[in-house]
Length: 234
Image (cartoon, rainbow, N blue to C red):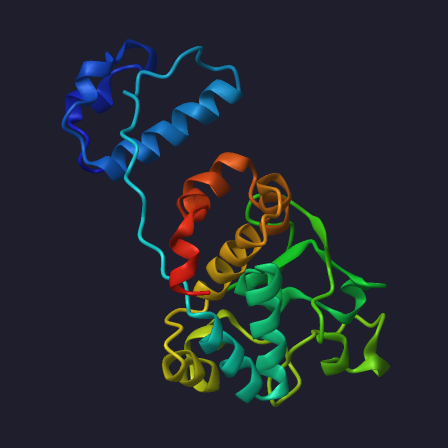
């Protein structure tokens, strides 16, 4: 916001012409765009003077090889197996995985309704898409059945406490991701999405499973993988 000219700052919001925003840094335009969307939602302004933001090209994403993911899960300790399966089979974010409690197990389904931040567990999700997802095959046998129904984390630290977001970038998780050339933990979520598409699941279903707010997000990220490219990694 500091990059905005003082003359422009001094003007009333409704008196700024779209052309006056030309040349501002993209991040500044994004913040201003969000601010005007809020003003519109509050009915304080009728239109936004921010010029339409240019759509970025497709971001490159890395899809791990199937055999690498399979071997990593096989070698991982029980705690890490749980995390890797939840990410690579049903596409959970690490923040959603760490927030899961045994009380979120509902029969053969998992209730995904909260996420972990640096300030602890927060009710609600990134895109406010609560969902019930099928329990991944093989996960049940890894869980402590004596804890079912309890408000205790599915995976915990050695001191039996909920893990922080650093879990996915340090220690044994980092070692295994590097060893099997997975890259970032989030690549397991990409892996899950692409594998679901390969199985020809409806993209509407996949979008809901991933917790995207709208299908355009799913299509923009994973639509490019709907062709023969699958043969490269699967």
